[in-house]
Length: 217
Image (cartoon, rainbow, N blue to C red; front, side):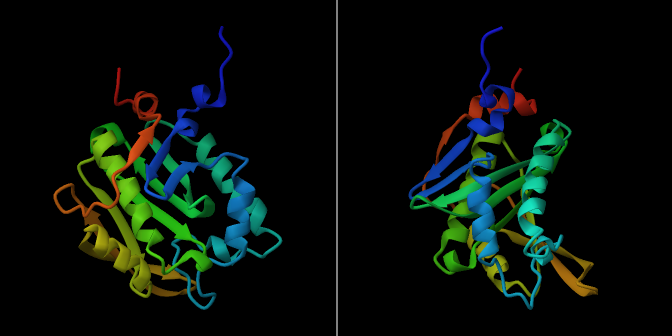
């Protein structure tokens, strides 16, 4: 057997999406320490919790390990029936956050949910909108999606504003619990016709990835 590289064994490691100064790159073990440093510098106002799973509430001495374990686990659990594609976001050569897309039975459903975070020092510069536009363009144009969903608590106006800019429309609401209190989760849906595009994207590794998830023979 010919020598195999990691990207042969796990094709998501070969995916890259470029949009202007923004690059979505795979979260390899070499990138994890940089992301942990960004997360450790703060992601949101500590008085609020914008995430469904409150990972940023982890004690400072546990956050690095739990962060790495989450990404290792996402790789280990990967199957065609259920997968989560996670990218590190690099902007002007600096790692600033993550952008993901999670789905189940994608070959049949042609839908999934975006999720992301951005270090506080990099917020308010339009990067959040650009990274969402880049992942949605990839999912629609290269993976043949029919819709993309998202959601945010109603006390998270920044995330909801990004969704509006990209073209998501309201799609109901869920009543959830966050930090022991009621939290309203605004559901959102994006279709190709509503999608507000940003910078054109250049993609590497798409063909192998399509085969990996069952879109090609």
